[in-house]
Length: 316
Image: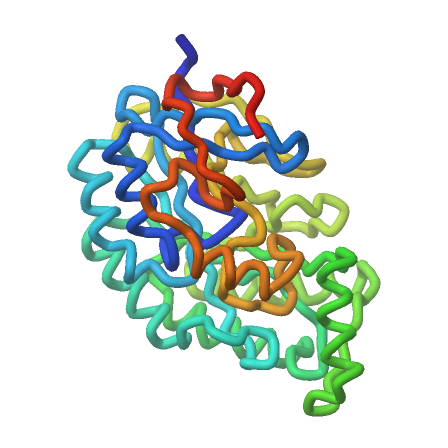
């Protein structure tokens, strides 16, 4: 029998915004299948209350997921909400909710579940002709003021120019979209912005943390723990013990299992690292079956659900 784990749902896709019914089915069934993004073989993750130390939910829109949060709360499993609010122009974020709506959701969630539940993410920071340093400072200051007293942490990171991300951003440049241009500035320019954001956050009681980019850390900005056992412990009212085991260099997250799938989020954010092909992601969302035990399945999988982390022999 395996030890209970923290479940992440999900940094690979937006489960709360788009896959709430699927999650409800998986919670009822007591487990989920996840395709290993590197080996492609599925493994089982138990969602039974006794096997889950806590949930970390990631989203840009929690409103479609409110009933699911209530169900998780009723079963007594602690959870933390990572809420991304950037408010970038539609050129970069084609279908995210408006900033005012996002702030209203945070207010509702904090009122319903108490302080410490919601972590604001201003992430990733993109340097472009429509999101320059002054734009970031103004937008961040407005959001920090609106969220003051509701959140105590803001996680930031700087966009990484993965090939798929660079291709989409360069596509906007080639298309001549509003004279768009983008760049990946040197470390000192990023750190200068971090210092300004740190000070703005501090003025509103919000500490700034930086996700998995330790080479850019500045005084007063700590490394982020997005899967944070201490925060889960605080909201649970009892210790949630999980070893630190990040998923990439510089990651300080506690050990967890993510139950999402890449190339399934239809938000269409141009800078997204989790989507290689936006059309494929939209098709995956349109075609998904809420009763399927796995997101992003290319064919039905009928293997039963078992203990957390058990690999499926001969899985596709």
